[in-house]
Length: 61
Image 1 (tube, rainbow, N blue to C red):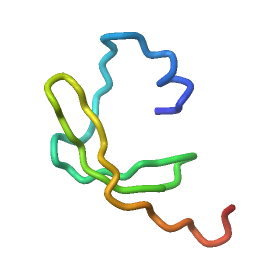
Image 2 (image 1 turned 60 degrees about the horizontal axis):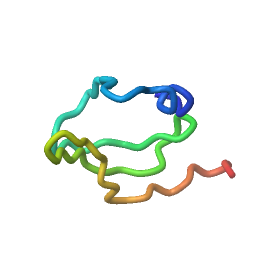
Image 3 (image 1 turned 180 degrees about the horizontal axis):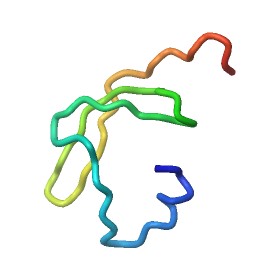
Image 4 (image 1 turned 90 degrees about the horizontal axis):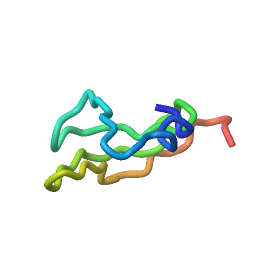
């Protein structure tokens, strides 16, 4: 989801994930993987715990 859409979300908005608790996920920036982590659920809060920053692809800045 692009950041401009995230910023427009209102309280109570639902975002469907293709992952569940403890699943490994990739964090993307500009459609490029920048980190990997796991999904955490704590009561009514969902987060991604970053476990590893991924190296940049060769030829990008």
